[in-house]
Image (cartoon, rainbow, N blue to C red; front, side, top):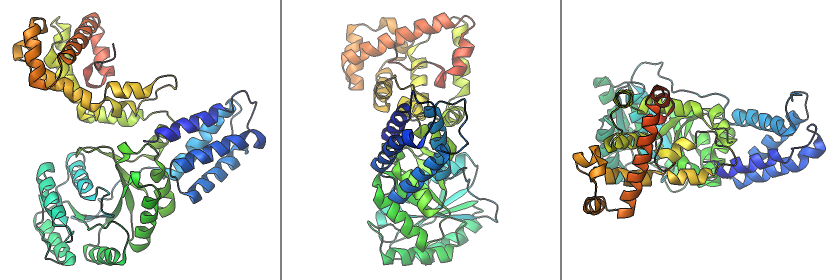
Length: 453
């Protein structure tokens, strides 16, 4: 997300190199570049105009520090304005009320609303230790009702049964009673979506809202929908008392303009951001961290939080003790590292949160460690016998052919993995004498990813 915008904003700041200070003359062309970059990123025109005006006003004011170069000064100002436009600070969900806390999700069809309901439930169950119940009032799409029931089981949430021949208001009324009887902390209501904003949709959403009296009304919007998403957000904000926004499919959006627009045009905070298809791929939204990502400065805080939540400390410490005793780094150990990396969305997801210098080919790095390649490496290791994983040296030509066929890969892929493992094993041996503890603390999952030899 924001790849295109990040590059254009960095280029704009570099154009000021060699200038003594920021003046109206030397920032004119730079602001034109910033304006074009924002428009190309699908940021709404009124938002672009306000953003540029505020940057110009601050750049020509007295707030720029004398110790900063013009490029640094502009980046500092843009960062501050990005934080402002994204909401200044994160806004957590409000649970300070008598349970069940009712959360209603609304949005257009195709935005990923039902999947987002499940992702939010999983997050509340695992992160906030809440007992969650789900209910669908999408009587126009029976498949959505069945989908939510299946997802509820998968994430460990309670579920209220509903059917296409019921009135949405009656379903909500029953769900509220069942949530109270089940002592659920949270009831999440999945409403019907349409392919476009229409009066029927809005009236139904209003009726459900009136019955449910939700404490949180969240609008789910597709990050890749561009200006259409902004228009839909405005329409829903006018029809319902929204309290926040959830951006979906952010991992597939290279522009990011929707994130910059919906907060400004609705005045509602972005609460969460969907960053993948997996049910744990829902991040809390932090304006300051997102601004840092947009400017190519990474998001190390979110990465650290993910490592703490998803990396197994027991396995990492076990590997550290094993290496310290002089026992080798085998293919089972490598598989554990790859699986932990996969749980964090793969190396590409991790790299997005790191401040990668402009002279580093980040696209090549991400390609080297994308999820599909890591999954293929795991498949190759799974195709081996326990003895082969423990003693890779016994893997001869015939064994390689059997492993390749079992994993659905080529012999060259097996050779490549074995070579990478050998290089990692050598590195581990070098660092095992006193340096391994430091290495394990510093590396997500306990080791360097394969492919970086």
